[in-house]
Length: 241
Ligand code: PGA
Image (cartoon, rainbow, N blue to C red; front, side, top):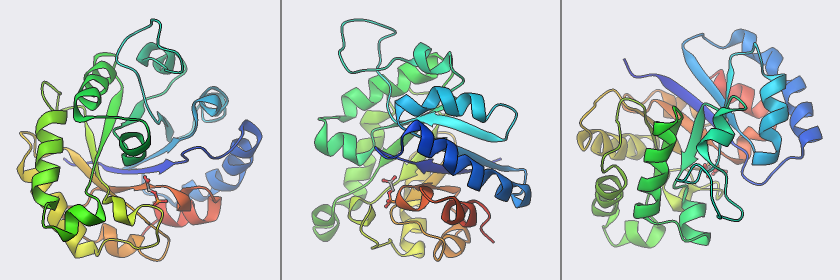
């Protein structure tokens, strides 16, 4: 059975106080959310501990936005899996395009992070997706297949979520057509050994397009940036029709 997973990626937004304020507005809306939907928030590292305490007993799971492959060591600025699991983090985003674009993340380092996360019981969310130029040059399929082939070496597909995030759709308001996202996600699924991996769509998911996105048969959820920062808008997304 493919699970529906809706994740809010807060990127580098919200202080601890702001994240607490968000929860006060957001949690009451979850009374309407069907039980089978997995809802998660991926705040900056500094908010994970306080959110873990505030979310104790709620159905919202916590995700981090990155993880290092070693358990500890001289890696200034990095965070390891045991540091995350100790405070109740269950998921981690790996290989987001902003990490690839601005921080030198490669398919090789993505692969190391995925395996380390799984080894410690975290469920990684592997992000893949093409740039506008790659799309225009007809390279979408080959690029995504190589991201999967290199990223998923020795990765356990029983404990994995994938997010298809076309880079040209991230933060631009230029959402990928739902049917096109469905097509690419079908292609991603065809490359996997486990057909039950949940595959999300991400890139300008908003309250006004979530219903259409989730109506697509291949799409199992959403990775939501900007629209996850406001309680009402993220609530409308998790409570899609
Ligand atoms: P966006 O970001 O919803 O603001 O486009 C999505 C993401 O980067 O995960």
